[in-house]
Length: 76
Image (cartoon, rainbow, N blue to C red; front, side):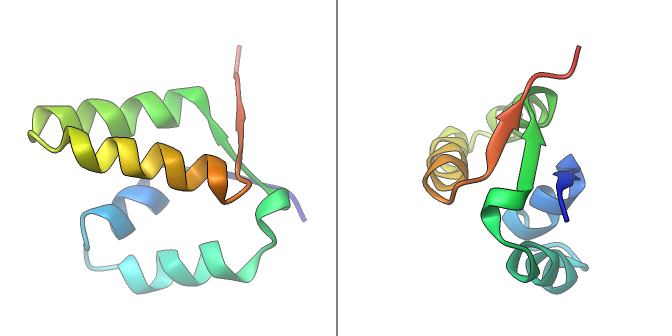
């Protein structure tokens, strides 16, 4: 099953919000080669983290996404 992941799935985990456990379960339940993220999602996460002064977290998120095999997609 292929999934295009929404920004909020990642933000739940990154910001340790109320549904972080559920978001981790989604991320852990599907093979990473079946997970995709839009370039817009990556930019949205970056914008939020840079505004909060957490640029180093954004670097880590991008590295983890790419190293984990989650594929970025450009959505026209």
